[in-house]
Length: 102
Image (tube, rainbow, N blue to C red):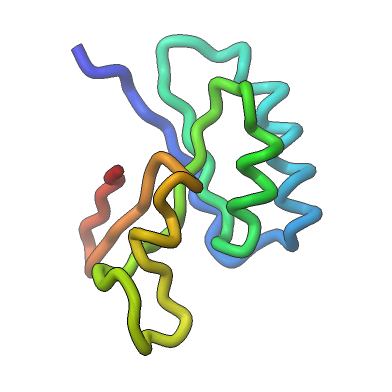
């Protein structure tokens, strides 16, 4: 049976320092929660810092979006290669549907 997943998408909220503080607070509280996969999805600019904050935790890290091209002139987009090794999940959505992959 698949383990349920709960993911928090932070949207366009938090500075890097606020994201680190929030991730630390969530880690403290969520590490005691069992039988559910826990994922936080901060803004792209905070992924690296939040990754360090969550190291050794049961809380997983996800990105909020990803563009399908590996590289190119796509201003503001984030490629799969940029996310590889940085996070375990990605929220991808279109119109009324959304999915979490990695």
